[in-house]
Length: 407
Image 1 (cartoon, rainbow, N blue to C red):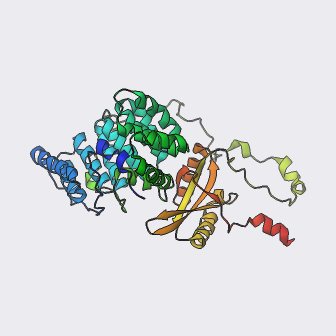
Image 2: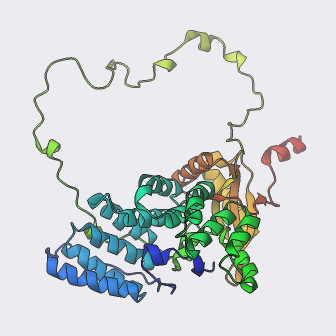
């Protein structure tokens, strides 16, 4: 997916330019033995900032990790580390570092915005939206709006961006972010009209084609990577030794008082003779006396979430429909919630190749996110996005209909 350079919020959020990151995986050194050294930390932080300005992701990560290792209680150093990870396309590591930065400095709007972007890159749309809402007052409207759109809520993004666009100090970037949010909301005519305010006429159609591709991501990280103009990489997370040590729990350090013999436990007391707290299922002779009332009628499928919204759960992007069909069969056998649903497919260009996107939908956003959590619990990978050309897969044959036809 091509990067959207004109509307890149990377310059504002990360102080990065439009050059692609190296995407090199950097493995941290053994930080556990590094003693705190504030002066060295400051030197490493300055070096990391210079590397960021020069778009040298690997060097930025090395210096930022050293800065944090030598002064782990500095929230701004951890924000710098998160920015470095983002430039390197390491969204999991960035989320960890920025979460620690916010723990040290909850008022850091820049860290909150960057954490939201990292969360979107890892597929956590719901967490990103919650974070953006909580820190909305500390994030510029142009960035807040676009990040909200990337987090799967373009309509809310438009409510944020519309006043900013009308303000006298509105910039081209603000207008283009608004135009992209319109496109992501499916309002392409309006998007083109707004984009035309800052895009040359001979480039406008190309911009719309670029956004059309942008609106159809093959992976959870595609859109954030394109906006930040970085290359996402496989990421195992930041070095464990750099994790923010939890502050002592002083309440836990005080010895608990000797339990007083007063029958007042926190939960409702449960009889020892009934280890399973399910009183609704105590034996009922009426049920035992009527076993013949249960006839082998055709079992009704479990209720399925109503298709009431524009969101789909993407289960993967594959080389072709055949591979997607095999993946669907395996995933369907592991995740029972998928069995009543119809698989959907759509092709999307990816570089010189074409990928086949496998999804299920269409749902309201909350229902889609709930299903995605279930899929992940069952061992699958998924993310939630808006539908973009998804249709019932041509190879799909409902098992129930096949069974009826055979009778």
